[in-house]
Image (spheres, rainbow, N blue to C red):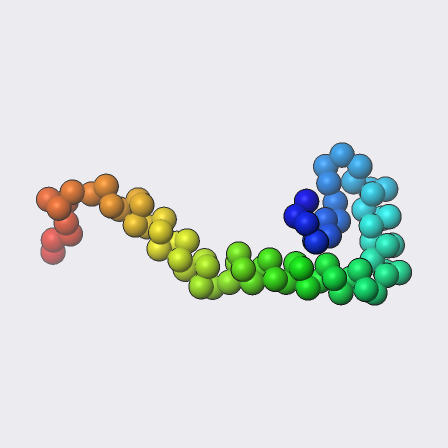
Length: 75
């Protein structure tokens, strides 16, 4: 789990743990807001269009940088 975020489910104790965590969020407004802010920040830092575009560009550069100059596109 990432510090300051709220992980609702895990693979081991899914049903009981999930219900307990959801109930905790329902009852605790400050906790909801805290986790909401932290998760939004994480989403903006890791999944913004700028980040996605940079990762996609790096992937393409990695994949196509191995092509030699003799393999350039010709019409």
